[in-house]
Image 1 (spheres, rainbow, N blue to C red):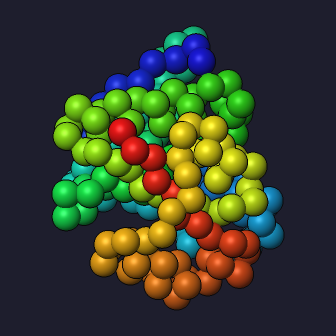
Image 2 (cartoon, rainbow, N blue to C red):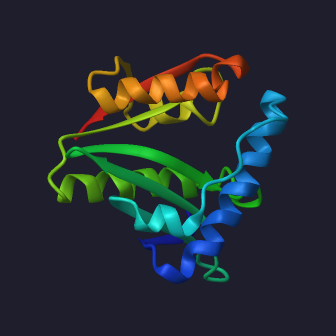
Length: 167
């Protein structure tokens, strides 16, 4: 990866939204998910409990990706990882995941969870290559996520899984 990862700032809110929108377009196309929910609001992500890290391309110092880790009841959950398609397959996603796991460890978390699509190559197979393993939703928050995803109809586009990495 020819880039750096830093803590997100309030001035990154618009870029975070744009990155997620661009990354979602790739997923929407791959899944044929034409009724996909809109990208999250960057300012809302920044104000959520937890942290957001931004990946920048060293060539032009512009944001090309972000990772959002929620803190819910003392539990770290990787809520979103997005990289603009033009910067894909250059190590930015892996760099963001590595930085997020390091930050979570520094904050005292012992594991990080996420939910994703099992068969999309840049979803579960990618996270598995980062050390995540399929797991069972054990907390009320994680079980509620399963219900939220079902209510949004996300499971109609493929099998959803929870994954966990121990830190």
